Image 1: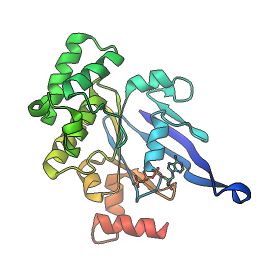
Image 2 (image 1 turned 45 degrees about the vertical axis):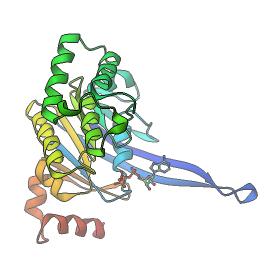
Image 3 (image 1 turned 90 degrees about the vertical axis):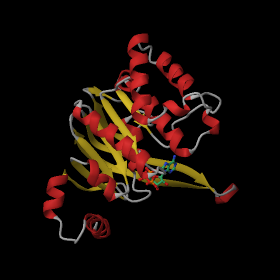
Amino acid sequence: MIRIENLTKSFTSKTGKGLKKETVTVNAVNSVSFECKPGRIFSLLGPNGAGKTTTLRMIAGIIKPTSGTAVVDNIAIAKGNNEVKKRIGFLTGSTGLYERLNPDETLDFIGKIYQLPIKEYQERKEYLFEKLGINEFRKKRLGQMSTGMKQKVSIARTLIHDPEVLIFDEPTSGLDVITADSIIDLIRESKDNNKTVIFSSHIMSEVDLLCDDLAIISKGSIIYNDSFETFKKEMTAPNLTQEFINRVKQA
Ligand SMILES: Nc1ncnc2c1ncn2[C@@H]1O[C@H](COP(=O)(O)OP(=O)(O)OP(=O)(O)O)[C@@H](O)[C@H]1O
């Protein structure tokens, strides 16, 4: 379960030189509240720069909110970051991978960090490698891999400790439809295993494939938050993408 209340993040930076130095504040996320339930897939949909990554990074405890609270699996983020991190799998475009390691070595390294029991770890690794089609390049160095191959390894790395809460920041970005499909399949399976899943996207067709509950974010604020069923029932545009565009424009 994820529950966030009035989550807000402002970034402050200095621009210019000498006497012309100015402080610039960007309100990336403004008082955002929503709840993601176990066994359901929650989509955070919004255009570029809307505040999706910033929101997810706050939920994952990577950056501190300026104000507001995030509770993950009954633990407040501010109070127990490490406890929360064990329960979370966070996939983001900037997930670090060591270019000199191969997928096997990468997962071994992460498995040790999480101190996973060896048998459980091995089984989980084999399962994820099979599911994601990593076996054929499991001995190849990350530095010699394509974007899609690296994304698969990132996903295996995110899921190796079988977390209760899965946070995917644009999980299929830059992937071909076949690769994207295996990832979508894995996300669905996590839902069936009663995990709490949130993923961000700016593509309505991807949301349509997976979503149970939908929040639309625009310029840092939530402009829609309800079930996807309700969104479809209330739709006045001829298709989902147009409905999304209209709602963002009207906000
Ligand atoms: N570290 C930072 N310092 C200053 N501004 C930032 C920082 N990170 C994000 N921002 C700004 O906050 C706003 C929201 O950015 P964010 O990355 O959360 O958007 P997003 O919805 O994930 O966008 P995209 O779909 O393009 O990835 C943008 O205006 C961005 O420039």
